[in-house]
Picture 1: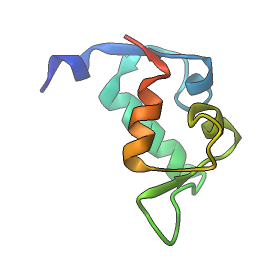
Picture 2: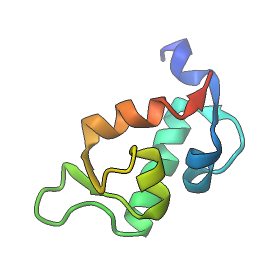
Picture 3: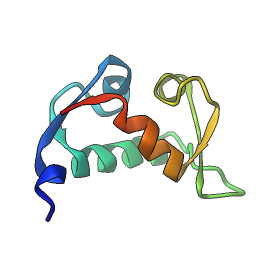
Picture 4: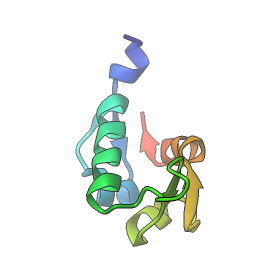
Length: 82
């Protein structure tokens, strides 16, 4: 496993509303993000590669109401402090 992925990162205030404020490894952060998306049924039903943002995720997604999984990864990484 890549050491960079195992190193805990701290979510900023916006991301903390989705995954919690405690520092956690990126792998765990991704897992929590997906748990949130599934719990709130935010995966697009027609195109499952897209994520529909609720109010909390919209803040993380720079105000976008829908992003692709690839774009989501990039946007989320701007909300963590290594």
